[in-house]
Amino acid sequence: MKALVTGASRGIGAAIAAQLAQDGFTVTGTATSVDGAEKISQTLASSHGEGTVLVLGEPDTEQQVQELVANSGPFDVLIHNAGINADQLLLRLKAEDWRKVMDVSLTSFYYLAKACSRSMIKKRYGRIIAMTSVIARLGNVGQTHYGAAKAGLEGMTRSLAWEVSSRGVTVNAVAPGFIETDMTKALPDAHRQAMLERTPVGRFGTPEDVAQLVSFLASEKAGFISGATLPVNGGLLMA
Picture: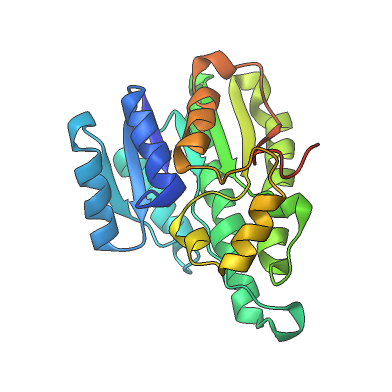
């Protein structure tokens, strides 16, 4: 079976791509640069996977997605992990930054899910998973655009689940808490310590923690789970 993982050149996306390849999927991972795509290809070489350039949020995103699905698909599993952020208080937030975050994190999921679900419905099997964030429910200073985009992903997964689950296609969201990635390592020490103190398990998560859950949701074993948002946050936010 084939899996598509967006934003797979590093961090959580790279861990997911590696885990799915280990699970036996032929994985196509996307990056925003040729160097990133080559890095993915090298990581997935032993499993016949590949990396490709997909610059989400651009005017031709829909065309890029359609070409990718036509050339490398059809896909049995879609993992929408790509996302960006540029922290800024709302009063100082530029409209262009708002649109960019929305386009890459949320609008691109519309194009990806639409293109990938067609063949899944015909096949009567598929797994669609959107990576959201604890920020969608917890909120955070300077992340109104990021939080709105991630909350939008959660809402979209629930509605899409109503539309396609009867055809054997499950749709879920995974909401990581604070995970050790390049982005979180760059946070000020005081901020990191404050988040650590709020996390009951007493540590930050790893990309592999997230990848293990995604691995399960992408499997046949998760056929009765759809429309859910599953947390991987160490207890930072308990629902």
